[in-house]
Amino acid sequence: MAGSCEISNIFSNYISAMYQPEEAQPPLELLAHLGKEDSLVPRQRQSLLLWGTEKPAWFSEFPYLWSKAQVLEWISYHVEKNKYDASAINFSCCNMDGYTLCHCTQEQLRLVFGPLGDELYSRLHEIISVSDELSWIIDLLEKDDASSQEIFLNSGASELGNSCTKESLEEMKSANPFYQADLSYFSGALSPGSSDISVSGTGTSRSPCSQDSGGSDLDLDPTELKLFSSNDGCADYEKGDSKHGKRKRGRPRKLSKENRDCLDTKKSKHSPRGTHLWEFIRDILLHPELNEGLMKWEDRREGVFKFLRSEAVAQLWGQKKKNSSMTYEKLSRAMRYYYKREILERVDGRRLVYKFGKNCSCWKEEEVSTRK
DNA sequence: TATCGCTTTCCTGCTT
DNA sequence: GAAGCAGGAAAGCGAT
Figure 1 (cartoon, rainbow, N blue to C red):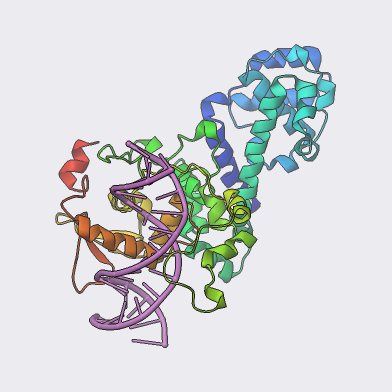
Figure 2 (spheres, rainbow, N blue to C red):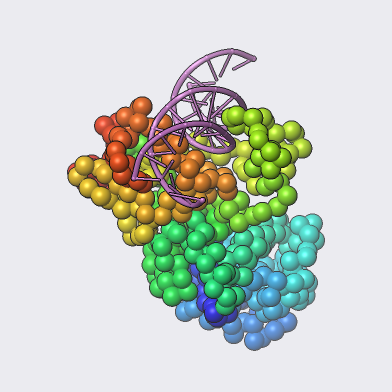
C-alpha cells in the first residue's frame, strides 16, 4: 500500500520537473510587494519565507487540493518568476482555494492578474494534466490488491526498470537522475518548457550516430503515456473489424474523418519520425541502468542480444510511437524486416534472440565510448 | 502531388 | 496448445 506521502513525492517530482529547482528560490522581492499589497495572511508570508530551504507546500499537492495559502504561494512564485509587478495585482482576489482556482477561466485569471493571467492559466493546466495522467498510477499505488500491482508491473510503463514496485519507486526518488526520466515514461507529463528532462537530458543516451533520428529513442515524447493508459471508445478502432469475424488481409483502411478526429486527441498529428526501432532497441541495451530486466546482451562483442520481457519492450516501443496497441508480434515483424537491410542478422534456432548487423551503428563498445 | 522509406497491422504456416 | 518465428500483403505517414 503506497502511502499518501509517497504519492505526494511522486507528484512533487513531476512538479519539480516542471519547475526547475533553481527557479524555486524565495521570492524575496515579492514578499515586499506582498507586504504592501496583501494584508491577507501574515502566516502565508511566513511559509513563503521558507522557500529558500524547502519546496513550497504546493509542490507536493494536487492543485485541486491547494489551500488558500498554497494558491497564494503559487501565484507569488509566478509573479516573481515572471518579474511581474505585483502592485498591479488585486490580491484580495487571490483569496481562493485550489478548487476555485482550477475552475477559473483564462479570462477570469487575466482579469485579475492581467498579462500574468495567461501564464498562470497555462501553468496551472500543465499541473492539472500531470495530475490527471498520474491518476491511474496513483490509483494502482493506492490499491492494495495484488491484481493491481500486477497490472502496474506488467504494464510497459513499469517495465522500464523492471522494478517499479513501491520500494523501487522510493529508491528512484532519492535523487536518482534517472528517476525523472523514468517518470516521463509513466506520465509523459512534463511541461513543454521542461521537456529536457529525459534520458538524453541526463547526457547518457543521445545517439549522435543516428542518421535521421531526432534524438535518442529513449527520449520519450511528453505526451506518450496518455495513450498508453487511455482506453476510451476510440480504441475500438484499433482492433479493426476482427471482432466481426475474419477481416481482410493487411492493414485496415484509413479512418473516417470523425474517427481520425477522435484519435487525434490521443495522437499527435506531427509526431516526429526519426525514431527507428533498431535505435530504440540499441539504446535500451546500452543503458542497462534503465532497462534492467527488459533485454540483455547475450554476446556483447558480437552484438547478440535477447528480449527478456518481449511484451514490455513492445509496450515501451508503443509508448514511444504513441501506439497503445503495439505488441511483441508486431515489433518482431519490424525487426525481421531489418534482416534484409542487414541492420539485424538472424540468429537461428534461438527464440527472442537477435544480432546487430553491419548496417547497425553505435552498439559496439568502442563506438559507444567514443561517442560519449 | 507523387514517391519513397519505414513502420504497422494482419495473416498463414511452421517450429519450438 | 501456447509462444515465437518467418515472411507476404496492404496500408499509414512523415520526409523529400
